Structure formats: C-alpha cells, structure tokens
Length: 402
Image (cartoon, rainbow, N blue to C red; front, side, top):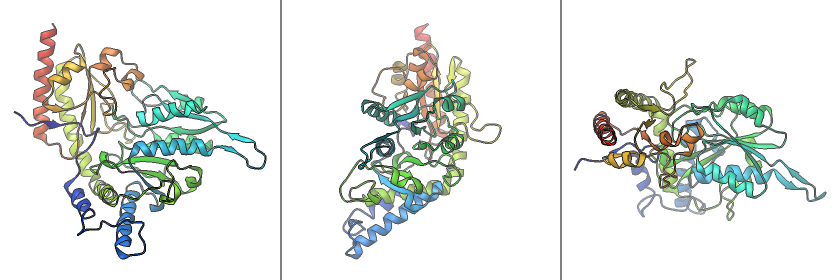
C-alpha cells in the first residue's frame, strides 16, 4: 500500500519537531510544568517567563507589542471573543440616565469561516443587524460595496485575511483605512495568513486579529487574539474567573501549548522566505500539470502577486473544480491523497461549498472542487505522485462517465 500523501495543510499542519521538543520540556516533572500564575515560587515564575517569551515571539511575527497578545484556545474562540466582545461593549445602558447606547450593525462577508458566520448568526438572534457582502467572482471584496454597506450605527467589520478554501488574499490595508476613517472597529481572521504572507499591524490599523497555533506548525488547542492597545478596554470578555490575560480571557495558561505556539511563530518568521519559495515552486508544478487535463477551473488567482507586488493569493492553497466529475467520487478515487473538498469544519457536509457558491459557481463546479494545500514538509516526490494519481483517476472517472 502506498503511503498517504498529505496535502491538507489548510486544515491543520503537523507540529514541527523543533516545536514539539520545546513543548515536551514544559510537561513533565523534570521540566517547566508549574502554573504560570503561581508567582510565589520560582517554578511558577519560570513558567511565566516562558509564557512571556512566547508572547514576544508571536508579537514579533506581526510587529505588535507583546501586551497586545491575548492567549485563547484557538482562532474560533478568538473570533467569538472579538465579535461578541465588541458588539456587547458597544450596547450599553447608562447607569445614571438608563439610556441605551446602541451601535448594533456588523459587516462581514459570505465567504468567511464558519467561526465568524455562525457567531454573526448568534448575534442576529440577540438583535444585531449583519450585512453579508458578496465577493466578486475572484473571491475579493469590492471596496465600493463595503463603503456602501457601512452605516452610522456600524460598530464592527470582520473580514478574513486569507480565505481557507481558495487562498485568496483580501486587501486588509485598504479595509482597515476605510474603517479607521469611519471610527469602526476592524477585525481580521488571520489564521490562514500567519507565516505565509507578511503581516505588520504597526502599519495597518487593524484593531483585532485572530490566530491559531495548529495552522502554523504549532499545537492544536491554542490561539491568540491580537487586541490593539487602544482597543483593549472596548472588548468585553466571554470567560470570567481569575482575571487572566488582562481580564480578557480567564483560565490557567497552558504553558506547553503557549510555548509551542511561540516557537512556531518564531520559526515562521525565520523561515517565511524559504517556506514561501518552496511552496510556490510546488504549487506551480502541481497546477501546471493539472491544467493539461482540460475541463478544470482554478478557484482563486493563477498568479500569486499582483502587478504592484502585493499578494493576491497564498501559494499553499490550490482549489480546482473538475468538469463532469462528481466531487464525492473524485475524493474517494483520490484516497491515496489526503485532500479535502473545502473547509475541514464543513467537510462532513455533502452540500456544495458555500464559499464557491458565493463566488457564483454552480452546484456542479462547487461540488467537484478539490482543495490541495501544500506546506513546509511537502516534498517534490509527493507532488510528482499526486500528479500521477490525479491524472489516472480523473481520466478513469471521465472515461467511465462517457
């Protein structure tokens, strides 16, 4: 039996061995296992020191201040904290006048991750109004449509940096400026962009940004919400009990996971250029070999960069629709490859990808799409074998259906 070739890095990445080694040192009796909140003894202070080193490592990748990094359990919690925390803060009852100050309008996009869309649906049940932008057919948001959607009572805009299904990059710099000019809070889900494209929050006025450890060769169960220093008091916590993380997220800090995420971010910063080159070369080889099959459509951009040099697509995600092929049959036929038909959070759903449907793809194109996602540990031989398998199975299924 041939080994399974892992091409599902957008769903999760394996933990880098260098990260795992750092984590193990924080788990056993011989290591730094103490509670970071136990400041009364040196073991607790040692654990706290490691947490703060990791906080600096995460902040360095996005050029933030360490105190702007808030530990969470992952990007899903970070997204929930950002959206609910801002929405609830801005719906206040003045204790003296009893007047309700309401800014209850939120803007997001139909192609967001379910962690944002489902949170917006929850807030709608609480009386908030949400405008869902429809992206252009290439997956990017029209700035005029965004401008037109904003209102006097708009409190928050939440737009992801890189789409998890098609890898398209949104112009968060432009969106951030629009929001800043209108005094609207701007949140970005950056789970898929960290370590793949450069992020500099000192130059881009993003207020809140979500990250997840397991998308960047770190462990599952740990994430971060970046909260701009000037925004900190405008987010209400969801979890209470102990006042950890400046009161925004209570709970005993998981030192081993935090250390793992910190090391993963440090490695991503050091290896951003080499990772990008490696992955770009493999993506080009894979796509240029799939195209000759004919009847294939790339969902996203062919070119990684625009003419002005700005990224419009991450190299690691290649989403392709195969004409005349039923998606479930193709996935089954490609069993030697660990790939997906979309987000890991919705892969159990047989419905066509809601992301591709939002881009205007019909049901057949949306259902016959495969997401190939490449990462740090993908080898050229992996891609060679993947090309061979794809050609064999696509031709076999089409011949059978003819």
